[in-house]
Image 1: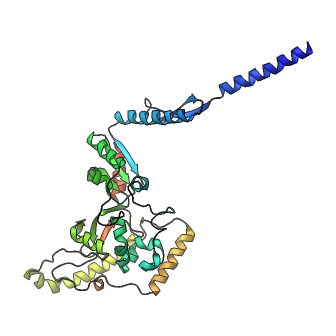
Image 2: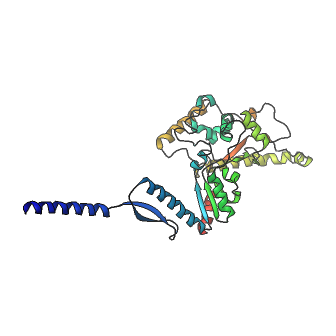
Image 3: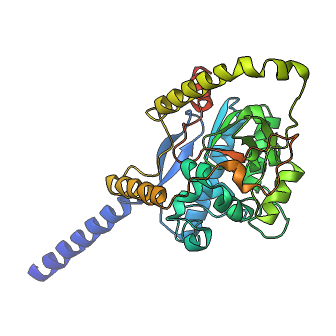
Length: 330
C-alpha cells in the first residue's frame, strides 16, 4: 500500500504538471481587422516555424483588410524603403558617411558635405560627390522605385492615400507615380534646385545633370533682363539695395535662432561642430560664389544652384507643419 500510494502521488504530480504546461501555451500577436486601426489580440500556437510563417501571412492579410476599408491613409517613410533600391543610408556602418573620403573632398568631417555654411563657402566638395547621390548605381543609370514605392502609387490610384511623409530625398515616390500634392519631403528633395542668387527654382534639367556627371558646380542659367528702364532707375535703386542687404542680414540673424535642422542633439558633438567651424574659418575657405566660374556669361544670372534639400543649419520646411495640421483634421 505505501508503494502503491507513492506511485499514485507521482502520477498525480506528473499529470498536474502536464496539464499546467498544456494550458501555458505560447502566445502570438495577430491583427484584428474589425477594430480600427490596429487592435492587438492573442491566440495560441505551439511555436513551430510553420505557425510563425502562417502568423505572418495572417497578419499581412489582416493589414490588407484594414487598408481596404480606409480612404485617408497616411504613410511615414524612411531610409529602408530606398535602401532596397541601391541607395545607401547616411549613418549605418555601410552608409554614406562611413564610406566618404573626407580628405579627398577637402572636408573636416562627413557632415560638412550637407552643411549650409560649408556649401556657401565652397560648393565644390558637394558637387564633386553629387554624382554618387544622383547616380548611386554608376554611370548615367537612374535608380528605379521599389514595389513599396509603387504600392504608395496604387493607394493613390484607388483613392485611399491622404499623404506620404518621407525623410528620403531621392523622390522615388513621385517616380513611381505618387502625385506631388500627396508628397511631403521632410528634408527636401534632389529632384529640384534653387539659385542662391536670384532664388529661381529649376527642375533636374539637362544642364544640371551634365554638371553633376562632370563633378562641376552647377550655375543658374536664368537670362537677365536688360532694358532702358532698368538703366535709368539704377542709381535710384542703389540705396534701396543697400537697405535691403542690411535688412536681409538682420533677417538671417533672426532665422538662426529659429528651428533648424541640426547635426546632433549630443552636447559633445555640438561642441565638436563649433570647433570645426572655427577651423574652417581659420583656413580662409570663405570665397565668393562667382569666383568658382571660369567665365560667367553676361546674360545669365550665374548664381550657384543648391539642391532643394534641407542642409544642416537651414530652417526646416514649414509645409511639414502645415500639412500635419491639415491632415489631422481629416
